[in-house]
Amino acid sequence: MTNRTIQQFSKWTYYLALLPVTMGISLWQGWAWWSWVQSPPLLEQSLDTSTNTLQIQIPSGTAAQQIGFDLEAAGLIRSANAWRLWSYWLKLQEPEGGFKAGTYKLSPSQPLSEVAQKIWTGEVMQLSFTIPEGWSLDQMATYFESLGYFKAQDFLSAASQIPEDQFPWLPSNLPHLEGYLYPDTYQLPSDRVTPQQIINQMLKQFEQVALPVYQQGQQQTQLSLHEWVTLASIVEKEAVVADERPLIAGVFTARLSRGMKLESDPTVEYGLGFRQTADQPLTYAQVRTPSPYNTYLNTGLPPTPIGSTRLDSLAATLNPQNTDYLFFVARYDGTHLFSKTLEAHEAARDAIRQQRQAQQNE
Image (cartoon, helix red, strand yellow):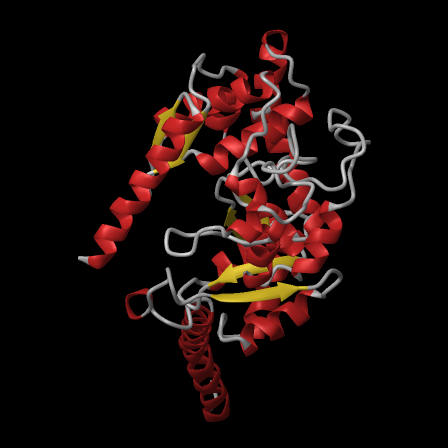
């Protein structure tokens, strides 16, 4: 073997020996890069994920690569290139799948794979809203606008459209859906928040929770569905203590059966758009202001319910307590003082007013 041959052999031996080292370094660098780019931009221990999250909206038709650019710009992933590689991997695993449009709640403490999985499976952000018992449509509208869902007027306009085709049990000739939007806590995907969607969800809850109560007890009442919901909404507004609901319902039922006016303050308040307090009660002039909802001036029930109603008040109205009481007055502690005669009622009212004045003067 000549010296030239030996030199060439030694050179190739050197290169062959160097190749595994080079490949090992390249693989190590590649793995190090991948480990870094798929890791969370911020470590979990440095971030409170319960409060430090970002909302990102992905419009319909957004390409996977564009989603990666948006996520990188938002600081939710380290590399759009890594996102593109992971997208290819997901497509190989599920050829018919794809990233879903919607609004997502994501955290920089989540790894790239977790972020991708949420968007791939369409795990959109869930919004929660709570409607308390007794709230009117106006209060709901103001609440939804404060949450940034939509304008208050948009909700009120939608609530004046009666979806009789979807909910044929709704009474005919309703001017709006007051009283039929069931008070509860609801979950809904944020990318589909519209007034009609929320209204349909609340009507379905009424249909599932409240309507069966009336249907099962319909034979024991002379009230129509609309009359039942209307009277129950008044009971809801008047009753604070749960134990008093059947008795308050009994008083109103007794007054209706005798042809007496209900004389309920909440109906006057609803008609005026006014909420009285202990320090600012209804005035005589307000009580004498004409309105279809003024039950001091009009006999019978008002034309519509005056707010949302919980199941307890609906049940109490369907099964009112049999009573000789015809009057009651609030004690300002949530309870009421009940009377059988007008004279006793006026005496009780005056006594409660004097007691409150004495407390204010102390």
